[in-house]
Length: 120
Length: 461
Image (cartoon, rainbow over all chains, first blue to last red; front, side, top):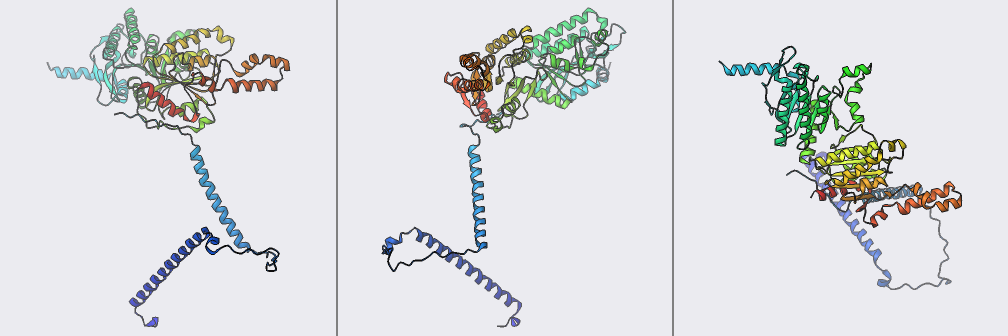
């Protein structure tokens, strides 16, 4: 259907349906992500050795043991600095919260409360 | 005869010769509350026969912020407000009414002195009102407002009042300026104004700038002395972390008293001790704060006078103690320091008012005994955690207790300093006093107000 052949009303309705489909797709993807993240978290807690059985340990001097020298991993500088910034920001936020909690805990406070006197 | 017209005409004559004093009365009294008495009591001047409308004084009763008061206000527009026998009789009538009804008396003083033509009758008039004013003090508060001149015997009548209000225009003097001028060529205002008596006497002089302020301060005085309560929104649980750093008297007083409640008594009579009427959790009380100095004769007399004032109105005493004991100057001894020091202890021990002591820093020797000792009569004693309580200062104690060690070492300053610190830490800390039960509580300085507020409520039931 060519766009030029559509009426204004038809164009709006087509656009609206497209938008709704797009939003729906977004939410579906988000839900899937959450599901996967949750599953990964639970997976980390599982002891896979119990489920799948203990792996046979390969003897150290076996020919099968690859003599692998660790590869130098080259990190991109930008990625590291972003992560460091994030960590620094998180730590700063934590320290602010800790300071607030500490200062309120250290604030002088009697173990009793005095009632205000009011005229009846 | 048209009696109503006669009444109206006579009233107009009186009113036309008393505008200034009536304007002042309108400002300080509640609207439409003043009822005048003895308006038509009039004599005549013996010298020139001029009319003395109302005998130069306006008397009656009214209310100030709903507190009933009796009024005796001298009118300087009539013969300079000079006192005659008739004026004295009119004032005496008000004093008696005040005594019989227990209603406070407000005297407004503005007088040129005695009406000379009356001779000894005027003197008898003075004698009557001064002796009656002294008697009145036993029954009800007497407030004197010095509007203009209070000279000679009229000044002494003012001095009998419990509270004296003075503005910049007020003159309070025992001698007339004419007499003083014979001996002093140039009489400065300071000599005749209230400042002389503020610095050198224990008259309870309170300053005011305008009639509005005067009315508010009078109401505050009545709230403290008559009701013993003046509602205040300040939170009784307010803490003051500044006290954990510095316990000087200004910080202590600001931390303890309700905001806006302080009225300083004997403000200019020695700076080493401060005395205030105030409220703590809306309850009226007297606060005495010493200031780390040694107690001089003047400071001791100030506290004694203040305790007597509190005893008169049954107000509790709170002492904020920070003193290293009695002043050691020979000049103080020669002025009879020991008599005044003993009188303070006797005065405090003989009062029945609730007494709370807070040892904020030093409480050495006499300072502890007079201002914090439970044996003298303090019902409740608190000590800050950093307080130092001992018979003598650590320097004196180290010299006496560790004299052998110091002699053996040849008294080097480092060892002496260490022994001084040793004594201060081991013997002067408040836990030693608490072990003996001489201190009821050791507290963090910041918690001064909640502890004193709760103690006050407990003692006043």
